[in-house]
Length: 393
Ligand SMILES: *Cc1c(COP(=O)(O)O)cnc(C)c1O
Image 1 (spheres, helix red, strand yellow):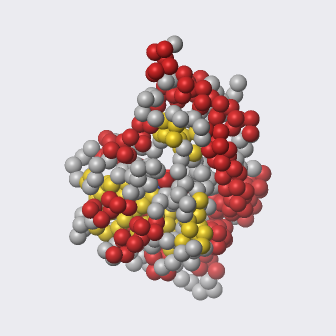
Image 2 (cartoon, protein in one colour; image 1 turned 135 degrees about the vertical axis):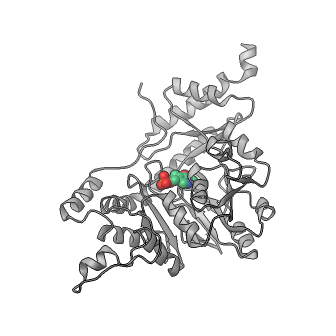
Image 3 (tube, protein in one colour; image 1 turned 90 degrees about the horizontal axis):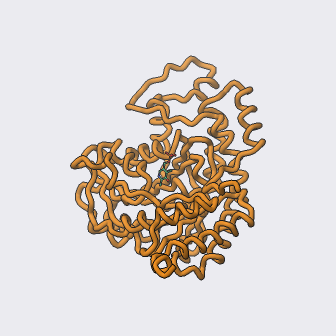
């Protein structure tokens, strides 16, 4: 029996052909394909500006810099996220301030934000974890009251939607000040590695473009197209956070596939929910009425009597790969040092989520038979691993 993987990117001949075209064109980094990808991505999410970069971590770094995060400042975020969220804050010399997640989900609890605000708070960095939109309306309202910018870590949320003033809008419009996306293969669309920043603010967009290319005053495209000799200058410290044209060409093909990818992911999530609804030992993911996930991951929560590792091993023995839920940054050794972060609220829910959450296989190519196998294995395993049943048996 072959193993059912947790995830699998959708890559095919169209992507190969796109890369071939770029390689043979002779222009392989940050050129016409990047520009076209940015335009198409901006169109897709409904943003005024989109700027492509090397990955989402570098996107987060530039977003935090753009809103003015400096050494000694604080940025409010969650510990219950991928480590890059907080690492980007530390790249600015700033201190991540961790608050807990909501009771039923994996996103920031807006009720805890206000207590975490201090005179040094320079930004709120909220995460749309696993593709599920966080409660942006409340985050943005609190932030506006305190004149604090909001950055959205939308790494997993390409194609997710939120009900905004009565209309469904894509994550990344953005509803905060800046949204950051990832195109790592574990996300719903991929360019190998890659990232995107979207904003309505032209000044932020100008800064992203300057900083991603060594702080260089003119782009290669401008120099290349000029009839006059241009000497560039470097007004500010920059970085090399460029995306290549080969990656962008793949991204453009992925964008064409995106509506079908999301439709299929939503269908699989719906079927999982239907099949596992009556299984009392697991809690299904909660999609609020104002949110439409892209289902980057389908994460179920085991009831506390079940042992996560045991359940995952039993599933693996039955040919089903799973992953443990999201990590908690504050428990990692890289965050052991004093001053590397500050904890503002009890992180009990974050810790509990990590102990009990399991990510099930979900990928576009998944066959109905595979989906049925996963759901069937899940139902069998929670029974086998139930301590009460083990005692009785
Ligand atoms: C994947 C991920 C990132 C990092 O994205 P990269 O493109 O790999 O740098 C950041 N935040 C979250 C929530 C992620 O899931």
